[in-house]
Length: 266
Image: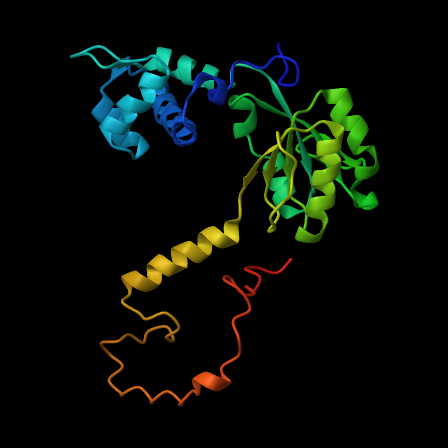
């Protein structure tokens, strides 16, 4: 089977597929795979768009970049679209992946069964803790970070997953890139700096939860900063007058953005 390092298809960039379309292809593939598992032969653009959470006009436009237009009155062939999108995403190949940082999150990722079914093979698990070396996680023995470069080279890895604490993430990233990794999935709560030609996708669970908290607060009709359960409708006491501020004594602006507090601790 071809490996990700040596056998790459034409990329979406070279084929002129917009990044927004690329981001929606996995949504279509997930919906199509569910239809395929139910032995559904064809699907209309409206039905597939609804299952993927987009509008049908956007779906038809996205599929036009793949050269797939469906058949009027019939719709799209499910199995062919599964193959076509899988090929475009590179999922018809074997993609060896290394996971660095085998704490609770890293171990959970190692045990995730969806990687193999989608063309990703966990080739190695790596951690800096000597106490973990040799211990199996999901049937794979953990290896020490001292062997990182050799592991990447021996397995022809081009995709790395970082699940380390924030303070170690950039150093791990630098070593992965130097070893030949060109795509990184980052679960560490920090922004990574990478050279041109290296793609990074960031997954920050705390940020996603904070966004959900924002929407929950708005649905409850609460003002930002108000204690839980207190809303403009129930809090009838008049607000205290703000203290007078002399414009001349206000501190100067520190910049357009100022200093932002950290979103979550390392």
